[in-house]
Amino acid sequence: MPRPKNPFPGVRKNIVKGKIYWKFEAAGYRCNIPGPYGSAAFLAAYEAALNGAKASAPTAEAGTVSWLVEQYLGSLRFLNLSDSRKRTIRNELDWLRETAGTIHFIRLEVRHIEKLMAKKTGPTAANTVKKNMSMLFNFAAKKLNYTGPNPAKFAERMKVNPDGYHTWTDAEVDRFLDRHGAGSKARLVLLLALNTGMSRQDLCRVGWQHVSQKAGIGRIAYKRAKTSVAADLPILPDLAEELAKVPTDRLLFITQDARPIGYKPETLGNWFRDRCAEAKVPGSLHGLRKAGATRLANAGASDWEIASYLAHADTTQAKVYTKKANRSTLADSGFAKMQTVSNLSEALDGKGKKSE
Image (cartoon, rainbow, N blue to C red; front, top):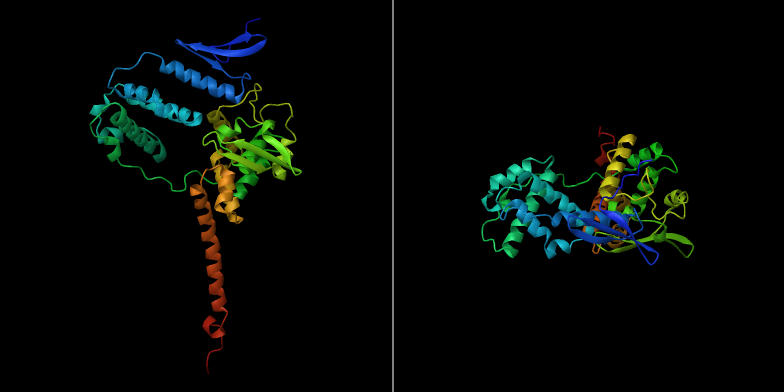
C-alpha cells in the first residue's frame, strides 16, 4: 500500500525523551513547529516557516521592486507586525513582485503606479497597491538612503464604498440559518462570528479551552490575534445550543471536513463564502462582525460596550456604529415632534371646516 503523501512538505517528526516535536527544513531554513499536529497554531507556524524559506532564497537584482520587497520583509518593521498582518501583506507584496518585480523602483513614475493599480479588480484592491507602493518608497527613504520622490503618493486614489464590507441584515441571518440547520458547521461558524465578533483568524483557533462558567453563566474569553486585546463575552442561548453539539474532547470548534485539523483564515473565509452562496445571501465573516456591532448600537450599547465586543483598544470604530444608531433614533424623535405639532390644530392640519 503506498505511503500517504505528507500534507506539510518539509516537516518531520522529532522525538526527544519521549516527547514529540515537529521540525521544518527547506531551502537551508530550519525551525521548530509548535503542536499539536494540524492545529491552528501549527498551521500558522508552518506558513511562517514557508515564508522564511522563501526569504532565505537567493535575492533579486539590487534596485528592483523585488529587491525592495525583500529588504522590507527582512526588516524589523515587518517582523514586528502581527502574524495575521504578516500573512496579508506578504501576499500583497508577492503580487507586486510577480507583476513588476524586475523593474528598478527608482524609474517608476505616477503613471506606472496607476497602471499597476488598474491591473487589480475593484477599487479597494487598487488602492491597496497604491498604499503598499507608497509604504515601500517611504521604507526606502528611511532605511535605504533613497532620496528620490514617492510617485505612489501622487497616484489617484479610487473611489470606494464608504461603508466597506456589507453588513448582514436580520433577514439575511435568518435566511442563512434556515438553509444551514442545527448541528451544521456553517450554522456554528455564523453564530460564533455574530455573537462574539471574532475575526477569521480568531475563529480558526477558538475551542473549549476558551469557555468557562462564571456565576452560572457560560462565557467565552479570548485574546484577539490582530490586536492582542482581550475579550470576555457571555454565551447567548442560540450559540450555547450549537456549542452543546461539539464534542468536548475536540481542541478546535471549527475543523476541516476531510481531516480533524484547523483552517487557515483565508481558507475558512472562502469556505464560508460558499455557504453564503448556498443560502443566497451576500455575506462575509467580517460582515457578521459589523452586524453584531450594529445590533449592539441599535440596542443602545455605549461606545465602550461595542469596543469590548469588537476587542478594540479604543472606541474609534465603535463610535461609527453608535453615530449611525443615534441618527436613526434622532430622526424618529424628530418626525414624532412634527406629528405632535401637526396634531395641535385641526385648522393647521387642513382638516377643519372651511369658513362659510
